[in-house]
Length: 422
Image (cartoon, rainbow, N blue to C red; front, side, top):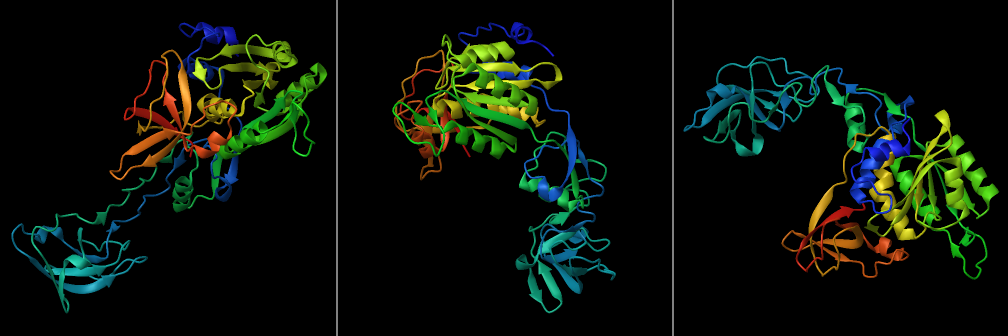
């Protein structure tokens, strides 16, 4: 296991007092590694889990050539570019069983969507595009090409080929795909165990009476929701007071149970408190000042020793900064630890409805509201007050406006990147 100093030595221009958001992402990608443990779960319990191995298709999907339309199946060799094609209907092919008759020249079969294509027939004309008179069908000229509206055997999935790759997350569509292969058990990476707690004497838990100078702990509930949506096994260690013995106990307990630890508060650079001291004492931890807004202070490293160490993410204390740093840095790192195939967040382009002041040299994440305009384009405006303690702005927002490190001020009408929250 490489130390933080070894990882830092690989990064060009590494400076813990002025890290770019891009450098943080690169550092974390080298720090974390996927958990090795796997298990087999019923398909009904596999939603959002990460595949531990490829799913191989046991047969062709579809297993036979079949019709993509309700219509009439025929031999497309009879199509002429400038003349209609007249055919006699000699039977009906239904979905779920093969039609057993024979089809001669000038004949066709009425066919339902999904029905197996009768032998010798390779084209389907949709029923509504034909002229039907009794058992006679006329197909207008220049309407079809040979092979139209036929699904080929194995067109979706080929027998013996991967249907889903290791590292894929089991989305609802993926669950349906696996079910279509008749597979009831799915090999997945075990759930990532993440412990989290808030720090500080000023933090109140729900149920405690208000007191002067204290605030109720929102961060634990925000973090719990974010972790639950990722599919993690969450370990809530509550609020830990500014007491060395209590902090040591919390970190030791978390490292013994979890793959990752998330804390909020007590990581400001230059701040002398028990949380930072205990992090340094119990692990290999770096304290950063990130060139970003909100969320400049952050601690990253490992707590514990040997095989039982856990990755640490020490987040700022302000509620919005907690969410932004989680979405920008922690979420991608946890997905990597879960074994998920790495993919950068999708950024949409939208036109700004207002001016935004910004100096190059830091990445800013502005809370934004994206709307679709009458012409179909996307427009985004800020939620107003961008203070890192204004949690209501995250409720109003449906995306984060990402103003990149080298980017300057934005004028109304300029295009900006937006990371959607949903």
